Length: 193
Image (tube, rainbow, N blue to C red; front, side, top):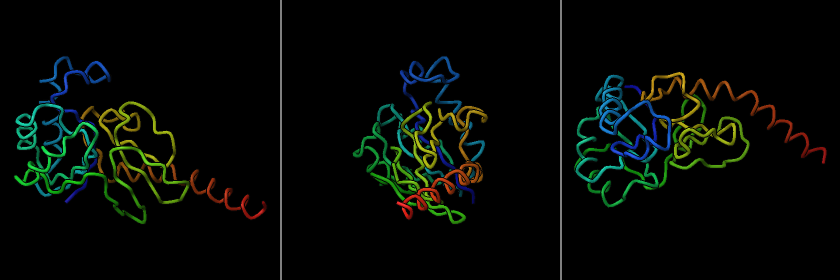
């Protein structure tokens, strides 16, 4: 069983093609390609943490997308996700879990707050805000990681591929020395002051 992360897929959202630099000419091409990429990575027992803004189509289009996606989807509500739709969809068994705000997750001594919006959790080693919402924009803090499909952190991947736990962990390990150094300096300055 593997774990994957994504956000801001915006299936069936025509205007997202204007707002971001997605490599598609039509919303149909985008939706179909992203479903195919998802299913080429995921097995039915894998867990996918989707951090909001899954589909901007109507209710029926959303249900149809979810029927096609493999894996156990844990959806955290985004600002474009309608609670009443996803509560119904969750009752249908198309989601593994549905959360209105967020959840916490631990992996290799790293604690993650998974939410749609980036959180400012303070400068602490091994503590991470993992989110979407900001699309192609950089996260403003080192311990915020944008896992959305438009994220600049993962531009090296083919567009629409999900982010693996190992890839997310690699970003954490790359950023950890700087965070730990700044944290220790902060502590020393507090003692001296």
